Image (cartoon, rainbow, N blue to C red; front, side, top):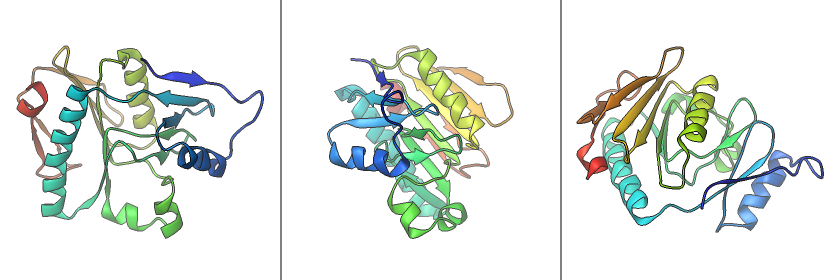
Length: 192
């Protein structure tokens, strides 16, 4: 099953509050919304992808607990990007000062902020073209560093704001650079 895009705009344009309520009323369905306001129904991941996601997230949790530099989020967290899209990266991170600048209400709902870092792990139901477009959207909306990991091809695309995409073939590790100081992801947990 692949993601399905539904255009309700000719009938109703959902407000941010209505979109939030739709998501809360349907907790078993993962929704995103593109910049045009179209709903994207995301399929659940399979066992291999889910396992890799949690293993990767574990490394981020340990690093973040040690450094206390920001807030870490899982794939269930939806962010309201500056272009109006509502997106849920597989892993995301926001610097503490930027998170603290949000009100408690903004933090409780879908935070109106672009993460500083995002990671997307391709699952068998994802298309490369759509996931690359999502990564470009992140970069156009203030994300500073992004990793697109494709386990099937063993390629990693590194996205940096204002720079060309760097493609790595079967890297052994990825560095968080100056966005995630001191963070290194051992790719053995990804390639398995």
